[in-house]
Length: 167
Image 1 (spheres, rainbow, N blue to C red):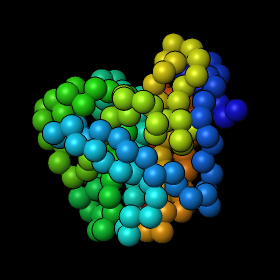
Image 2 (image 1 turned 90 degrees about the vertical axis):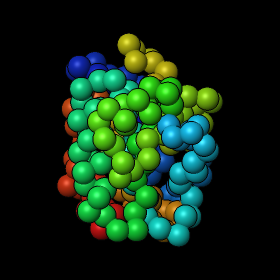
Image 3 (image 1 turned 180 degrees about the horizontal axis):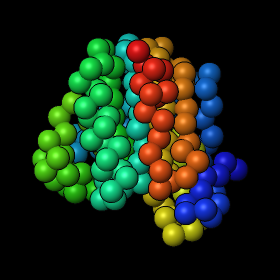
Image 4 (image 1 turned 90 degrees about the horizontal axis):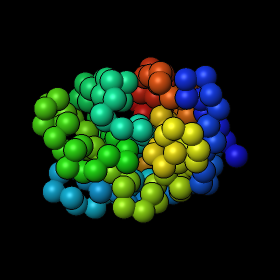
């Protein structure tokens, strides 16, 4: 079972561990705009950057989303999606308040299908039931080319490595 840390304490991750070189599971999440379905993973004919955060309602997740929103404007032919367990209504409000418009913010709240398919569901501890902080880059053919499970949930990811993986 994969693990990460929360304020120095080990937390276990549940679900199927996806590795670099694996076919990215195709999963439907809920877009914060209009509650429409959005498919992430699988072969989409363009690169994907799937950014996983526990909740947009935390300072680190909000900062990370703002950072990726700014960087997404510089990417060409890359679909960037933030996935959390936040309700789509809260995520939509966050996007409106923060001016998030260069990427999709989506929720895995319905069945936790994404979290289980990618092995990013926190299984125990204070944040049990939400996603850890992770990033997956997927090529146009649906193969995972980059993966980062951020070692400490309260810290930001390696933006440069994630962006380099989709350039």
